[in-house]
Length: 159
Image 1: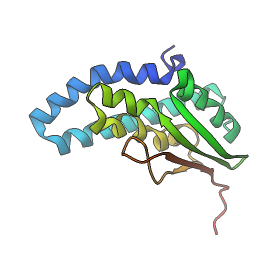
Image 2: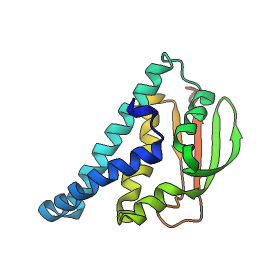
Image 3: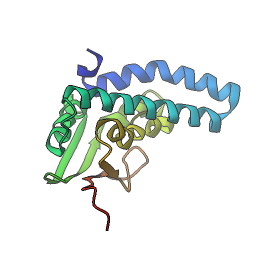
Image 4: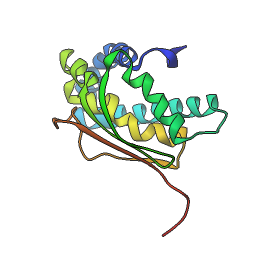
């Protein structure tokens, strides 16, 4: 199944197809519109992928199961990750090496790598479990030394 392929491999294959399509969209309609279309399409795909994994879990999602999904994204050394906190409500970690960013730069798509990969991270949660939200202040893809992932599951209580 496509969702069982290591994610780095999947993203490289997708980029080989998306890159030329994106370049043609830029030529036809301009960079701003092409980027907006790509961003919207990737977000929708990430939400759908999140729903797929939620269905596989029988709708019984948890932070522990969500964290386990990261095995797909880190497979083949795709990410070097330092977990800072993992409990029922939190999954906080830093990414210190991102081979996704390296791969996109190597094939000349570094300027849209954030749309192809980083754009998915928070959107995936909308499909998987809308109670899980991502706060991220920086990414390697956009030039930082590390990515700061701070997933938190809301309790449904209002302050």
